[in-house]
Image 1 (cartoon, helix red, strand yellow):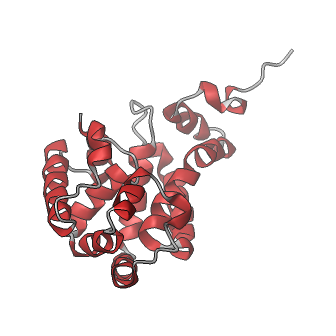
Image 2: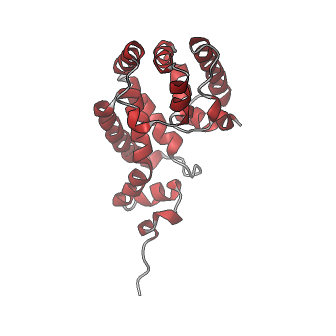
Image 3: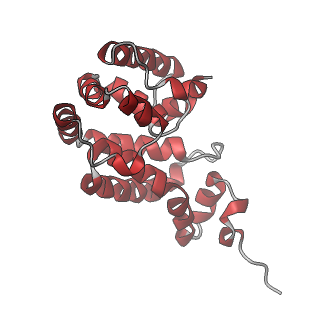
Length: 201
């Protein structure tokens, strides 16, 4: 009796195994999409809005598929790799991202992130500082904003964010500290990133 391919049971495989097998069985790469696309889309929507996010997610997985032969198979979690590709693609939409934050800063209304509210946004809302947060995000240098949002919205740890951006972990820590300090000043000493402190450990 023929054994079922392990690719049919994605729960038993880590990302590196899926990528390795997809080199011989390209259709198996779809497992990676199913596993990570929803979270990646939420991250991209929050940064760019729904329409541009669809393009970014699609382009991220097309690029990942094309680059899968070069993936470092010693890394079982592909999230830093995928978020790194997505962040580079988001960089092409930088003006749209800043415009989104500035519009939110002016109006305080955020139809983009409303379906994806979490503890951070609830804390900001409770403090009446959501518009201030958007304005502060718009003013952050791109590198600082990328680190901050990979950690807080993308859910990556500092080492994972460093891998995603191709920078040393010390750079991630430095940028995160500076971004948090700027947010504290903008939000009158409220730090909406405190919830994610464990990612820095």
